[in-house]
Image (cartoon, rainbow, N blue to C red; front, top):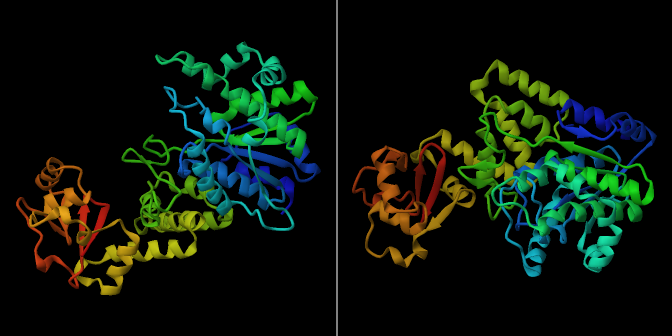
Length: 425
């Protein structure tokens, strides 16, 4: 694929939100491959699905022959980006940052090819060039070139200044740290383009300006839109919890289910922006979907493609297999299928829970196992007909009986329509 075609592909997928000097950037890409970078701060021990679009953006550029640099923000992660937040982050210590960096570095390696001899991606940590810089050097070499007026004009800073909590000098300095990253990478690795989510536009343009003022180089910025769901909720949020890329934090099955339950209004946009499927293949999927939306073929294609990207094809196939089990009743499942479900779904073992004792009241058992948060929640679900054991609605006073165990080992608990847990003994 020609390096210059990347902008056409991004535009067709709705992935261009802002660019600096679009015609100049296109002309630069027409000249040949460009070195670009995107940053990911280790504020947690896993990235989440909100990071998928910028992660895949770097991969798309690599596929078109460009040279991606993934920045793991060991320095900026210790400060915290004020953008999109109403109050100060809790500062992380160096040991936590190190643990988080190890985790997200492994996740970055799933999306970018660091091993190919032809065009390997590169990974950097901004602590490498930041931690040795003294405060006076930073103020003279970076702060001198950026006015407070310019920083206050950026939306990420202005919103926090105007909030009831305000902004500390620590987080106010985040923009300068990120700008210095761009300057350093331009000087040492020839980086000419920084990419990120649209909420990073202020930080990116600050870096572009710093590069221009210190070296005179003409560099670029490109942002992708932040993905939201059709109902207005923030992408990646489900019942208040993030959907994580870590299998330990969000199981591949739960990850698959998040996407297979996508709204029809979202499905084409998600296929375009969250998968590497070719445009003509996506068009064919959507044509079949519009002809028979009740079959949810597009949702299945999306869920499989994204799960395979994040967790691998084997995990995606297992999630498909587990999901297909729910087209039949619990009574129809074989012992092997139960074992597959137990390996895929959230599963708790009664044998490991001595605290249950002799009380086999189902609601009490589920509270002890952590399936329910409290007995009052359980009673409310029972009263509303929203708690099921082996496909049957749980009634008040229901006890866990020997006959409930399929193959003497498994039970299925369901809360509402989608939240399932396997009980195992």
